[in-house]
Structures are given as C-alpha cells and as structure tokens.
Image 1 (cartoon, rainbow, N blue to C red):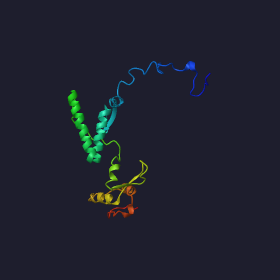
Image 2: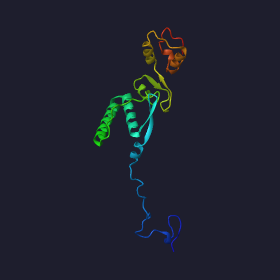
Image 3: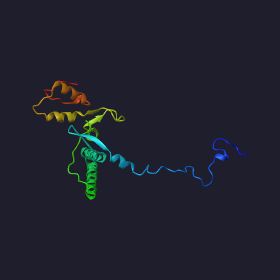
Length: 181
C-alpha cells in the first residue's frame, strides 16, 4: 500500500494515462480578438479648445503621440509623423476617410516640464519623485521679463513668479518689480 498525502493523491483519484486534466478545454471564442483591437476601438472623450468630442482610442492615441512629438522634437517628432503617414496610408487603402486635419490638444497644464530640465530652464527639486516641484532658473525669468517692454505684472502675479524661481535672490529684477525673495 502506498502512502497518501502531500503530492501523492490516492490512486483512485489520479488521472488515467492518456486522459487530459482539462477534458472540456478552454471555452471557444474567449480569445478571438487581440486585446489591442478591443482597447483601441473603444470610444473616448477628448477636449479640444474647451469643446468635448468623442473619438476612437486609436485616434486619441495618435493625437497624443503627435502632441508629444511636437513637444519634444527630434526623434519623437519624426516617429510621430511616420506613424501618422502610416495610419493615413492604411486608412486610404481600406476606403475609410483619410485624416484631413491634426489638432494639437494640450491635455495637462505643465506638460512641458520634461523639456525644461534638458534645456536647463528649470530644476526638479526631488529627482526621485515623479510629482516633485519644478522651479525655474533665474536666467529664464530674466529673459521673460525682458520681453515685457512697458507692460507690468500685478503684485499677485509677481508673488507667483518669485515662488516659481529656484533662486529668486539671484534674479536681476527690473526696476518696477516690487516683490522680492
């Protein structure tokens, strides 16, 4: 008589030779459509110039890809344009209407943050936290204020600018500037 226990079931309940452990098999039709087709075919709502409209997730993805390409330039822009051309060619071959316009949509405020660091326009205060505060470098503030000409910022906006600068005491503020560090 054999021992019965862990990893050693009774002989009467073991699978017979040649018998499958899953006789019914996987249910049919459950995995008929690739998952990306199901996701990219869904309708989503996007906002353009304050107006909401519904588009497919694929179109929203292309708009987002274009936005990122325009934001970061270089290889990202080339890749975005190549993807758009490929999509345009595919739609033309299928008889579906071609893309006639590309609308640039800015979805989140401050989305230029990733471009500011490589250009040395801003510094991320905690490089290990994705949501860390980003502060402007003094030179970029000076350049921006030099473009104002005769215009002036109200005190409230001056306070906001001073709080957004990494080292406000190093900025050469214009003569009309009231709020200091």
